[in-house]
Image (cartoon, rainbow over all chains, first blue to last red; front, side):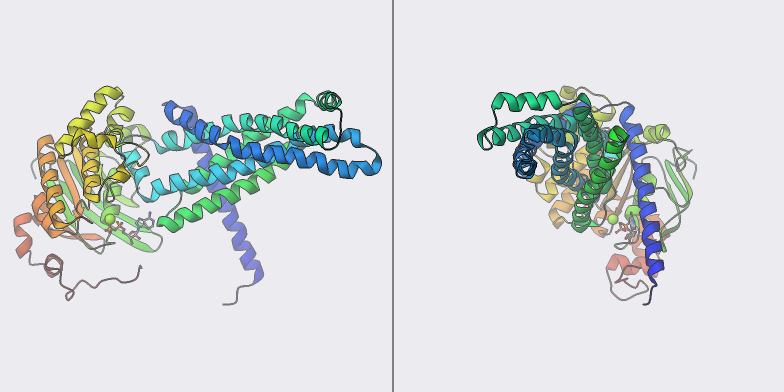
Amino acid sequence: MNIPLLTVLGRMFLAFLEATGAVTAFAFHAVRQAVQPPYYRRQIVSQILEIGYYSLPVVGLTAIFTGMVLALQSYTGFARFSAESAIPNVVVVSLTRELGPVLASLMVAGRIGAAIAAEIGTMRVTEQIDALTTLSTDPFKYLVAPRLIAGIVTLPILVFVADIIGILGGFLVGVYKLDFNDAAYLRNTIDFLQFQDVFSGLVKAAVFGFLITLMGCYHGYTSKGGAQGVGMATTNAVVSASILIFTFNYFITEAFFAR
Amino acid sequence: MSVPSKISLRDVAKSFGPKKVLQGIDLDVAPGESMVVIGGSGTGKSVLLKCILGLMAPDRGSICVDGEETVAFNDRSRARVMRKFGMLFQGGALFDSLRVWENVAFGPIQSDGMKAEEAREVAVAKLGAVGLGPEIGELFPSELSGGMQKRVALARAIAREPEIIFFDEPTTGLDPIMADVINDLIVKCVSDLGATAVSITHDMASARKIGHRIGMLYEGRLIWQGPVADIDHSGNAHVDQFIHGRAEGPIRMQVRKL
Ligand SMILES: Nc1ncnc2c1ncn2[C@@H]1O[C@H](COP(=O)(O)OP(=O)(O)O)[C@@H](O)[C@H]1O
Ligand SMILES: [Mg+2]
């Protein structure tokens, strides 16, 4: 078959628009259901535990090594300009504004986005979602809303913890490897830090939390065709959440800091 | 018919893309009647049930429950009619994150607002009705055999004492003895509740046992309907071929989809 390049590109563009429309409609419906009663409190709490508490080790490890490598890298770079004293500032600003929210969210996307897509996808192909409906329970309220709420609430908390652990990582490398004075390092960190650095990071985290859980729910909910379909839903949930994280990260940064 | 129908379908059609699955179904089910729809795999039996249940919207046609047109229902009316229904899914569709008793008590707790302790008693009673002891209630669905899962699913379907119960291939995948146990349970539960039943199956033994009336679905239409007693002399070559399970006859097996 001979399909000209333009046709292929056109089809891809149309498919992209269609998917965007479907996701947007799904998101609107989910949010509308999430704000109306009944609220399934037990589901919300268990999702917060699942997303937040059990992600702590992964996010903590990511954060501490990121903080450590940031300190080390900026030292090797800044030593050329005798600007080593800027290291605490660089570490804290990069962590709170960018690396904390983005890296923590990417880890959570891998862990939680995939798990949500697999769970809801399995429920879809085994007719459990239909069963919910026949038992007069709206799957959007019972399955989707608790996950979205948990994502929006927990990611900022996780990222805040990640910020602290990351700063600690930078501090450890700074003091024990690069021979900074510990009090001076901390003072530099705190003096330079602005409210907006942390706040913008937490806003990002809330948005990313929404995107991760939304992608998990959407791909799981719309999956079809047995185990293979669920596998595809899982992959798509992680990939699309990651890309959305990078995309939204840019625009939120621009909204906060562009002059 | 003098009594008004409990369920009444007129010219119901449903396609998926180019694939025409239902092409004009007319069906009436009287109150207290047990209707069985038979038909080969992939003929659209499950799609038919899902349309009646409101899980899928038909492309055209009318579906009335207790004389009420349900096709264009809003959420609230849909929920009200859904409360009359109980459904046994083909694979059981038990919630695997919940214990057996929580599965059975799900409807009473989540939609009827029953207190957990009371609902637990209801669950134990319903499990008893399908021949399962209270200790089974503490297990998770994955710990049960296929036959036991079907029983739990049946208990869940009857937990809210529905007026209309739907059964999607209740005996598929079970050994003949367990299939007969399930058939007996279905007959007993339906008559205990005085419910109307609509079942779909390709298991003729099951159809004869649980049905008052049988309809045969073929190429998107109900090509024959009649009392169970008439099935052996329907005068319809398709029906004859199906109930005797012959490879030769007017029905040609579709090997590939579409
Ligand atoms: N959600 C769906 N999307 C697309 N095709 C479907 C869907 N549900 C069912 N079908 C198709 O409709 C046909 C009938 O399916 P079904 O009602 O499940 O058959 P059965 O009689 O075995 O229960 C099948 O060919 C199936 O592929
Ligand atoms: Mg089926």
